[in-house]
Length: 414
Image (tube, rainbow, N blue to C red; front, side, top):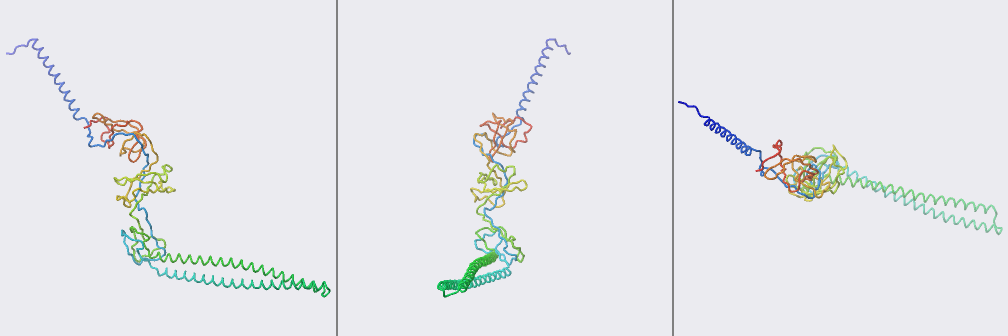
């Protein structure tokens, strides 16, 4: 039969119940703390890219896009309007200087060349004929001047004699006046003849110069036609790779139309474009770093195109190692042009997190944990970014993409 518990017994049982409740609550708290520590977000340093902030010289650069191109390339065009008869080389083949790439129809060119040769011969004969006729006319005038000079001297002597005879009374005044008149007429005729002679020499000289110029023009036209005739054979001007050739046998081509493209694939350059907002920040000779895939090559700006097209400025980069094996025509390249140099700058590696100067949320690793920190970044090079404030030299920074933890402020580092 049940008996009623004493007050003391009830108090002891109540105390035991309270103790059990406190112990259970303490256990729950311990378990919660343990679970929280176990499931707290963490990250393994092996899975991210970390770097130590350093201090040194930063070469500030601006980025551009570029394309690898042969260092030297030449386009062969048709010197005349004609058609393609034969093609001896195919695209991609190696050619040597003097190799015939293709043959054009030269029948009309040959007729034109012969016509030019005949025109030059005609001009040559005309020039020789004029020289002979001019020399004959000048010679006749010289002789006539000499004869008239002697006739004038004779008439002067006769006039002097007549004056003497008149002085001794052996002549008349009319005879003296007649001799003087004859001498004056002869003198004027002689002066006119000499003037005609001088004018004739000037006319002959200028006309001869005109004829010589016309002959020279004809010779140059002939030389041009002969060059066109020679170029119509389409020979390789140097050892190269035939990048492209018009293989349409029988097709008509206009004068100046492209026939083939030759490229020197032993050396390369980079043709680059950059926003015109960077105009004036660099010039020819500025240092450049070019990234082709995982390979970095140094170089310099060779020339800058002065005109702007679609908001872009074009320039050419000459590479120090222009024969690097990774280079191929048409490869895309990232180009970084050095615009200034900063000394004693705090730097961290340039990775995908960086998109220009401004504030960033970066993760700093310290004492087994990673904490998010707001930092101010400045200008950059292709390798490093300037830290304006927020990170000290020697601190370890996660430079990988951490977007999956953007809602967290602290991570456990494993």
